[in-house]
Structure formats: structure tokens, C-alpha cells
Image 1: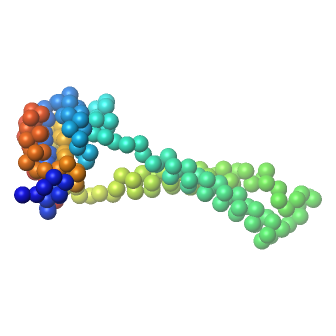
Image 2: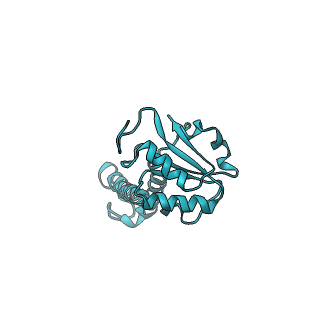
Image 3: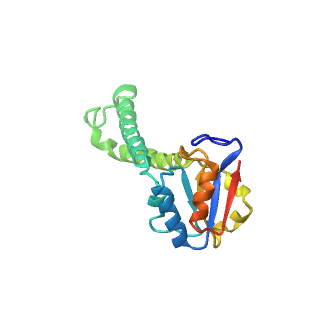
Length: 183
């Protein structure tokens, strides 16, 4: 029998199906209060407070976008400086080679371009996307998750995970059904 915190080979976790949004929210709060940290919830519509209940943390996406924006701005400015001062210094109307006000549009556009790329690719990377397959797709009743069903998963990678205790815990929350989720 596996001990607490030891994942079972070939098992993603245990999933419980609930009747309505409030039951799922209450179950998520109970699981979080019980000390489970690797939770996931599925609902056909957004439920206020559910992300906090399952322990979502603040995303690092804003830091990625800021870093990429700064790199774009510095890179755009350096590109203009290098082209006008080092590579092709042309005297136009007696203006200095290092005439930075003319480079503001390029610097701004490079900042926005790299920040947008950082937002898109950072979101994909931080969310683990694209993910064409997920283990919960192995559960037959999960087909209704996008229509009218509510599910809570306690993953096997959770440090407190013990399959018998998790099943018992989820059964006490009053779900319709509790099922193992194989890989």
C-alpha cells in the first residue's frame, strides 16, 4: 500500500463530480482547508472564488511581459543608435548622428512588439499549452464538463495524497461520483 505523498504509478489523481457550482466551491474550500495543494476544478462557466479556493497563485506573466518589453525598447533604441551612429553615419542637415528623438517611434514599436510576443508565448508556456491530451479525458463522465457538470480533482502528485484517504475525503463531500483518473 502506498504511503502518504507517494504517487501511484499510472494514476493522475481522483476526480469527484458535483451537482452544482456551490457544491464544487464548497468542496474546493474543504480540500484546501484539509491541506491538499495539487487541486484542479472544472466547470462549464466561471465560478467566483473558485480559483482562490483551489489555491491558484499569482501569475508571473506580468514579469515576462515587462522583461520582454524592456528588451524590445532597449533593442529598438540600440538598433537605431547603431545604424545612425556606427554603421551608416550620414550628416543630414547638420543634425548630430545621435539624434534620439527621431528614434522614439521605432523604440516604442519594438517595445510593444516584444511585449506582445512575451504575453502570447509566456501565457502558452506558463499554462503548459498546447495540451491536446489531458488525463481527465479518460473519465467517461468528464465529457459533460463543458455542459452541466462540475468536477474537482486531487492530483496524485500532492504531498498529502493517499488514494484511500482521498477517496474517503471526497466521498464525505457529497459528490455524485468519485472516480480514479488514470494516465
